[in-house]
Amino acid sequence: MKETDHKIFVTQPTLPNLDEFVGALTQIWGSKRITNIGQFHQEFEKQLTVYLGVKYISLFANGTLALMTAIQALGLVGEVITTPYSFVATAHSLWWNKIKPVFVDVDPVYGNLDSDKIEKAITEKTTAILPVHVYGNPCEHDKIKAIADKHNLKLIYDAAHAFRVEENGNSILNYGDLSILSFHATKVFNTIEGGAIICHDEQTKQQIDYLKNFGFAGETSIVAPGINAKMNELQAAYGILQLKAFKDHVKKRQEISFKYRELLKNIKGIRCLEDVDHVSHNYSYFPIFVDKNYLLTRDELYHKLKDNNIFGRRYFYPLISDLSIYKALPSAKHSNLTKAKKMAEQVICLPIYPELEHIYTKKIVSIIIDNYNDKKLSTNLSHFY
Ligand code: T4K
Image 1 (tube, protein in one colour):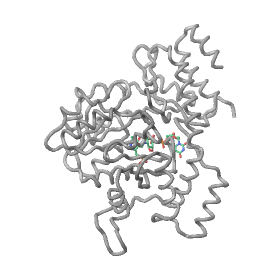
Image 2 (tube, protein in one colour):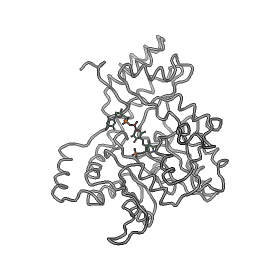
Image 3 (cartoon, protein in one colour):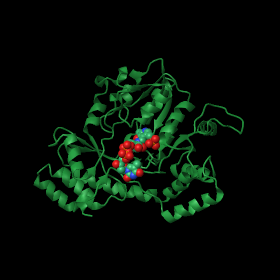
Image 4 (cartoon, protein in one colour):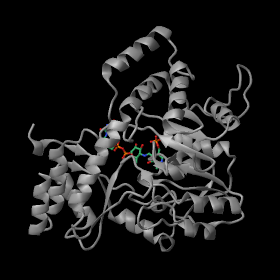
């Protein structure tokens, strides 16, 4: 196939070694234990706590069910302060728990909840704060925790993008009362579908384990109105194998990120995100922000890439607060969410995944640079080739 005919998507999942997976499947076929917290589920939880540097982890069928259950486990009601600049599952998880999301604007650089704006949004109905580590970049945890403590609020992090992100050598999954992960096929670490809740004590872990299994505490004892949200044995076995290659995958993603950044750094009207000091990143996404100084609008560039078989994504556009389900909420007004609105209107996530070949990153950069006829940049690009 010619390079020009090949479709490149925003991501492509990495899969474990097939022979090793068949080995695990053979074991599962032999035992006939395929779900309900079997041997692989327990082993994967054990390995993940060590691998991620967290105390307790409970595996889930997906990140959305993990977040819905985390909210239920903390007994949240009323209003929860969150961000409009995220995937819809963040707000939907509140909706499923009959909680009103209160949207607060984001910081204009990384797109995380603006900690300086949280306090103003607290009312007598507020029970928690639900920030998102967008693209895996850590929120301002110290400031947010201080606000939560001062107002006696719970703190749940939607850490769907933050698998193995560390700040000063500590996992950011340890922040807050609870954090949730997503292991969806499009995530930096996948179990096809999957997710997890991270917590700090055995009692909370036990409660979460009950909730993800209908509330069963024993054969005839049901202690809560739980749901069925368990990860099955096949996915857990797949996940254990995925751990082996994760570090190598992050290294490849980092190389691609650095190349994109180097080549795009002098393009007028294109902004990339820089690494955060003292943070070890997972390079899960590569967002660029297109402003009016670029020769095309964001959507023109997005479609131009598409016309050339490059399928980036506008994560996160539209803003959650602009969706028909949420836009009538008082906190959804644009006047309050100007930074989030701007980011949503400027973003394109460029393709990034370990197996993305050099010729395609080169092609993507060329398409962007072709709109900017500067000889110096062509020279710059020639280093890359
Ligand atoms: N919180 C946050 C902050 C999240 O970002 C998410 C999920 C959640 C919570 C909820 O977690 P989960 O319940 O999903 O575990 C994707 C994902 O479905 C979603 O998991 C993710 N966030 C969101 C940001 O992106 P789509 O609709 O953009 O995915 P889709 O199917 O269009 O895939 C994108 C591209 O990836 C495709 O064009 C091709 C490629 N792809 C995709 C799949 C599924 C493959 O090559 N192979 C595949 O199997 O939502």
